[in-house]
Length: 246
Image 1: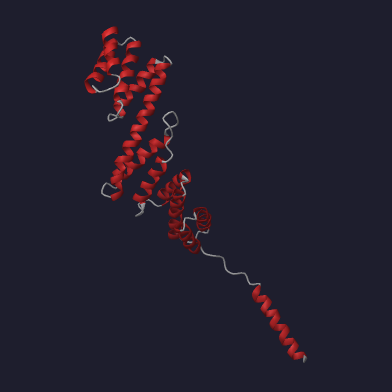
Image 2 (image 1 turned 90 degrees about the vertical axis):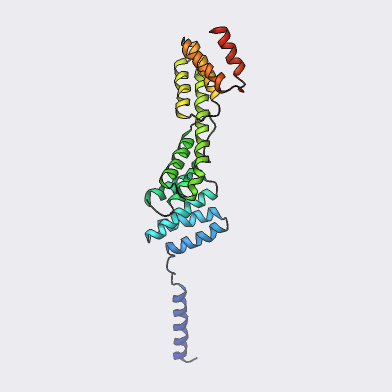
């Protein structure tokens, strides 16, 4: 083989090897976001979360970051990871005030809180946040279609909070902390006037008044039970208390 030909072949091999070693340019945030959308639509939520976190870390534009943040919140919600969804919806609302998607983000945030509501003997922060969030949606966007869902969630949250207060009031009554019981039970009627178990509230409040020496208030409270809740299971018990002890 002639030296010139050999040299040419070696040069071609060298150039080919060099081209193969070229590192491709890094993917853009927008490319990561678009990939995550496909993953989300195919319900591959864990993978979508990982890609969206890269997209947000690879900050390139406010619009892409905004889209990635909202999709990340939606992905956590779809995966039923409600604490993480809550965090991301809050970040979106804080970073993008007045955004056209604010009503939907508020609705989703409220639902994220709703899914974290605990039993009545546990902490009720999620229930309170559910009510506050949907009240904000209703107040700020009264004409938005999603505002129509707000009353149902507000009603549920308030009923749950009232049941919690009744649970605490009954606990104080059973443990002999009558002043604390009276305070908690009285507050239910003021804060949750539509509570569906006001017969129970009046019954235990009446007994707490009686045991604490407030006979007039006990009579008034138990008579309210008899007047407003004639079908209550506690009706006959309230009657017996009024007849025997007052």
